Image (cartoon, rainbow, N blue to C red):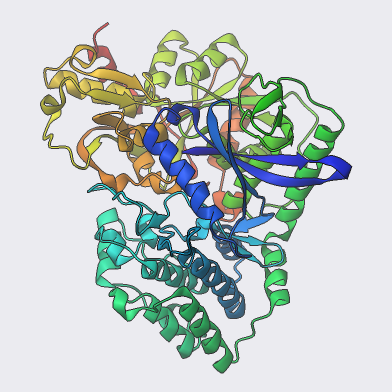
Amino acid sequence: MAEVHLASDRGSHGFERLVVIKRILPHLAERPDFIRMFLQEARVQARVNHPNVVQIFELDEAEGLPFIAMEYVDGSTLRDLVRGADAADLPIPIGVAVNLVSQACAGSHAVHEAMDSSGRRLGLVHRDLTPHNLMVTAGGHVKLLDFGIVKASEQGERTRTGVLKGKLSYMSPEQCHQEDLDRRSDIFTLGTVLWELLAGEKLFSAKTELGTLQAIVTGKRRSLAEVRPDVPEALVAVIDRALAAKRDDRFETAAAMQRAILDAARVSDVLIDQDQTARFIATVLGEHHKARQSAVGVALERSASGATDATNATTLTRGGSVATTSAVGMMGAAAVTGVILTLVGVLVILLLVQIYRTAPVVDTYVSPTEGEEITLVFPEVLDKEAYAAELEPLRRYLETALNRPVAMPIVESYHQAAMHLGTGSAQYASLPPNLYVQTKRKHPDLELLAMKVFDHSTGHDSVLLVPGESKAKGLEDLVGGRFCYPDPASTSGFVLPTYRMRQAGLDPETDFVLFESGNHHQVLRDLIDGKCELAATYSGAVRTADEIGVTVSTARTLMITGRTPHDAIVSLGADPEEAEAVRAALLAFSPQDAVGADRLGDLERITGFSAMEDDAYDDLRAVIDDAPE
């Protein structure tokens, strides 16, 4: 529900520090429930003053939008650390895992013990103490962050039936059952995190969400001793107690769990040393921390030297008075006295952060400078910044394979991608099946080079979703409701669903209120947020929704409207030899070689590219031809 920016807080006498600005998204600012949740997050977190909890500096409002100014943690998440260790084929030392989780326990206990101004305990439960929300600095110090779904025992509101808050595979059994929660729910999550740090794999991860929920509530899980036999029995016993299915069988407090972890390590002669932790982090993520620090330094220098203009920087003062407005409207929320880093710098930093999350072991890279630039356009099928970060290793790979500079701009819509091809501003583009067929008819010389392979699959299902509490059994039950879709050119998000509607005797334009969300993940957000009664997307977006914090378990599938190939990489007007070289490079692409993993990122999950013949689209052509003019 928010966007996050890095900023420089500058004061008199040379005072300067980096801070993080978290601002509620403009389209949610009119929703009282989201405003309430956002403000509650800041108020709750401000009540906790502990070295293992990210500090809140300020809660204020600028340009009508509330924002939070908070501590900047120069480090990575535990999720990054696990991925980096896995990519480097290095198990996390037992002492390092124990040290990190014991610090997380200390921070959690501070959250649980937080009191209001009258000295009354608030009864806080974080509900999302996952590796995504546990930051670790280069020195090995852990910080809890993201209090967006913290629950207070006297909060005065209850989560509505059917809505699960938190990341599914880290929920406690009582969280899955939607029972009232206390601090022991967080203890279960911390036990899950420690198990995964030591095992190097997910604890609860079934093929379906229902399977994951069942594994959690029944306590069906692999034994840590089987996965990693060198973990001492005393420590395994502590983890087993934290993971007890019945909350009464767990530790009463996070502090008690911390003591038990440290005691088990001591009697088992497990070394817990801060320097050892820092050395391991440096081994796995050190080069990437240095690269990010360098990028931040460059952005700071640009900002300090005045290398900025009204398009890419905003200076604001306390209370929201804007001294220099932002033409892009992206930086207008910081009410700390200071200067937001230049837009160029911020984009560099955000890109690097995302690359660390998806490819923590990529070596330092120097882009080729000779030769004409090759432009491969991608439409914004998913969240733009995350999508760009996941595609960055592919861009680098293509530059290396082709020995040419490669640009991969992400444009707002499918039609813009086709337009770039048609006008000659790009030689290559990624097109969804529908737009490939349409563009091929307009430009017969359009060449199909390769097709994305998603999680080793060459096709995906088009799915229609409804809220979990919906009573609808078919499309006819939803007539008059709002239908959310990503883009009118989307095959799975619009063409196939509307074809199914017409088959059912319905007119999409008159029987439904059409609402264009913008991309597939936003479709899911809009459905969960109650903006529509019916939503269309592709199966891959549903599978990856957890990665962007969308709890799709609160929705259900109404029907599958068809199956289609994945997006195609095409060329138009390119030099034939160059196009053939691009095709060969795509078909030879290996995520394992590029990022040290079996897929490219958690959203697109590209596992390679496949050769594809034009006749694979014949069934889709029949659907398109059947559509009304």
